[in-house]
Length: 159
Image (cartoon, rainbow, N blue to C red; front, side, top):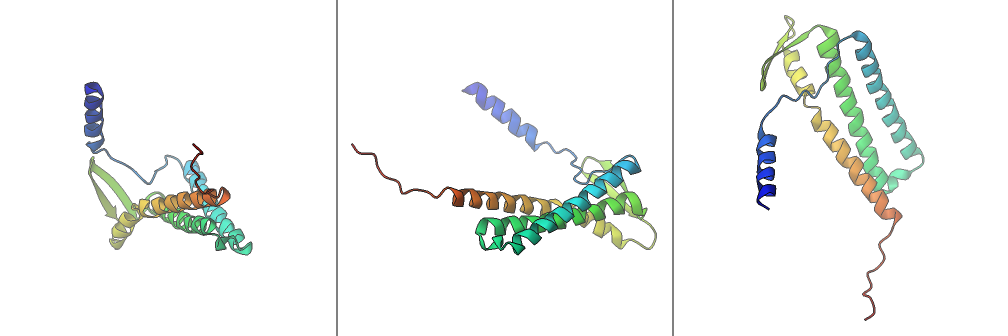
């Protein structure tokens, strides 16, 4: 019991140690970037197509499918954010990032484009779009699962 407590405490302390987390992935060569950007665009198209078919078949009247539609909308917004973030950092030449240490970075912009530093910083907050998308997807799938297997009334076993 003591051993588990010590291991749990050590794990908790380790989890509290900050490490850099780079939410927007950078790419070494242009080939990787183009494929990655194309994947974002394909994901946007796929989610748009999903929303189209959900609405065309009137499935959004079901609560589960409605939540999945919300997830698709958030996934579209997240992918648009990621495409713009990649473009700003790796293709536009307007933004340069310099990591100062584990918790600080400096955003430098081309002359006359200082406002892009704030825009780039906001695009790095992509988890504010991705996490709700995943939550809506989870809630939608749960609702669909529960509606597929209706709960029977609980009956106590005969004694």
